[in-house]
Length: 132
Image 1 (cartoon, rainbow, N blue to C red):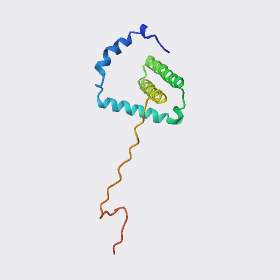
Image 2: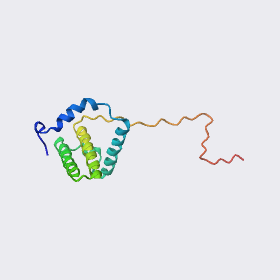
Image 3: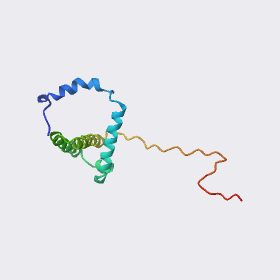
């Protein structure tokens, strides 16, 4: 479902609040939402990973957003909190996938943990040494 923004008053509220909300979302809220998004990605991993979604066209990626938005609208009409949460998170993930399909996301390089430092008199205590 695509609506005409001119006929929808909700954009006025978004436009009014947009400047006020910028960078004022508490860290805890961002982290909680990030966890929800990760959970949904993990739950749907069986459908395909990043390599698979990068094979979608931009139109297919947009269609995924529309499909999940329609599911969200039904959940809102039903007042089902769990489905609202799940489908809103799916919409956000589909938006991320769309940006990735468009080539607008540059993944951060994977961070490797630093090697453990070992002094010259390091003894691995996991072995049982017989010093007799």
